[in-house]
Amino acid sequence: TPLETRLLLPHTPVTFPEFEKLQTSPMTWLITGVAGFIGSNLLESLLALDQTVVGLDNLATGSRRNFDEVRQWVSPSQWARFRFVEGDIRDLETCRRTCDSSQPDVVLHQAALGSVPRSIRDPLSVHSVNVTGFLNMLVATRDTNNSRFVYASSSSVYGDHPALPKVEDVTGRPMSPYGASKQTDELYAAVFSRCYGLQTVGLRYFNVFGRRQNPEGPYAAVIPRWVSAMLREEPVEIFGDGETSRDFCYVANVVQANILAGLVEDPEAIGKVYNIAVGARTSLNDLFGLIRDKLADSRKMGACDAPVYREFRSGDMRHSHASIERATKWLGYRPSHTIVQGLDESLEWYVQNLSDETNRTENHT
Ligand code: NAD
Image 1 (tube, helix red, strand yellow):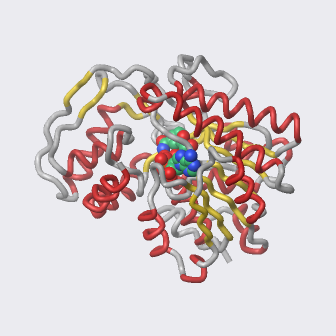
Image 2: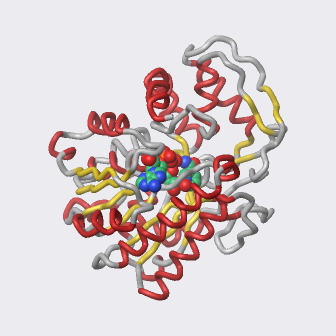
C-alpha cells in the first residue's frame, strides 16, 4: 500500500518509494532545533511516518507552541514516540548525553541562529551556535555508533559568486558572518567524514517558507513578514529595487530532502552537499504581487498599498537560483511544491495564526 504522505505533501500526493523502508524498519531520528520552523515540520512528518524522534532545542528562537500544533496533527501513539530535551548545543555534554541516550540512526542538525542581518550585528553569538555548537554535535554524533549526520547549510555559502544557477562546487566569498558560519560547517563536516569516516550529508536550503515560520521581529524572513504586514494593512518594505530574486522553497520540499538524505544507501551520495530548492527564480516584486493577489482573492485583507522601497541591505545576495540536479540524481529529490503551491498551503495558516504568533514572539523577546 502506498505510504500515507498527507501531512508531508497535502496537495500533491506524491508517493516516495524510498519512504516505504520506514514502515518496515522504523528508525530513531534526533532533530536539533526541533522547536523551530523547519525542525517542527520535520518532527511532524517523521511522527506521522511512525518514527521515533528525539528533539534538542534551547528555545532561543523556537517555541513549545510549535509542539502543541504538531501534537494536533499526529495520533496520540505517534506523539508518544517523541522525547524533547531542552538544552543548548553550545554545551558539549548536553550534545553527548542526548546522542548517548537516544542512539539515533540519523541526526538532522537544524539548530542555528539564522538571519544575515543578525549575524552582522552579533557575529560572536552566531559563531558560538552555528560553528561551536555544530562542532559539538559533530563530535557527539561521531561518538555514537553508526549515526549519520544530515545538516542544514544555506545558499549563503555562494556569497559573492555571480554564476546562476548555483551549482554546488562553485562557491564565492561569504558576504556575512552567517555565510561564513555555514561555509565553516561544511568544511568541518567534510573533515569529519575524511578523518573519522562519519557519514555526513549537507543540505543547502534556499529561502524556505511555510507554516510555523515566525513572522515577527527584526530577523523574520520575507514571506511571513510581508504576509503579516499585509494582513495588518501595514506597509510592505522591499530592500533594493525589488528585482532581487530568490529560489523560494516550500518547507515540504526541505522535509522530503532530509528524509531522503537520512535514508540514501548509495555510498557515492554520502559526504556531499546538495542544493535544496525548487530550481526557479522569483523577484521580490513578483513575490509581492503573488502574495497580495492570493490574500485579496480570499478576501483576507483590504486594499494593499504599493511597497515601500528601502536601501539594499548589506550582506544580501542579489540573485539566488539553484541547480537541483545533484540532489535529484543522488538523493532522488523531486520538489513536490512550487512557490505558488507552497503559498496556497501556507497563507491560510498565517491568516489563522497571526495573533497567536504575535503572543508567542512577545513571550520570547
Ligand atoms: P528557526 O529559528 O525557526 O529554528 C532554529 C531552532 O534552533 C530554534 O528552535 C532555536 O530555538 C534552536 N536553537 C538556536 N540556538 C540553539 C542552541 N544554542 N541550542 C539548541 N537549539 C538552538 O530557524 P529555521 O528557519 O527553522 O532554520 C533551521 C536551520 O535551517 C538553521 O540551521 C538555518 O540556518 C537553516 N536555514 C534556514 C533557511 C530558511 O529559509 N529558513 C535557509 C537556509 C538555511
